Image (cartoon, rainbow, N blue to C red):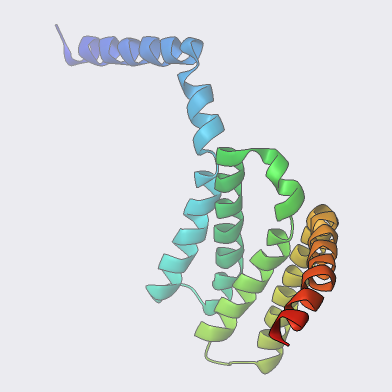
Length: 163
């Protein structure tokens, strides 16, 4: 047998295995579970290239954004995409992370970039607070009413008990 026959045989063997795995759903499972890595790896790669002094600091902006978004996608893949209705402020936070990394590691240290990063982080925090109040607000109202009622009922008794 010649080398060409071995090569053709190995290629046919690999093609058959790939087709079999595809029909069994192995690749669709891997793709549905691990696809956020295709977002995380470029984000990490941009960080590695910057810290290796290969690319400029401005690459940290998309690097921070991609890394943040990939972590969000991994979380949603694991716990369900319905969680995104509460976690959407992370899309704003990703931009804040990227800008803050750029501010921290660039030589220019432009103050307005830091201000914008903190402003976006504040918008993220305010958005989370509004989401919590919107979804959990009725529970907060209930707890405040219970605490106020308990204070009115039992607070006066405790005053009389001290006298």
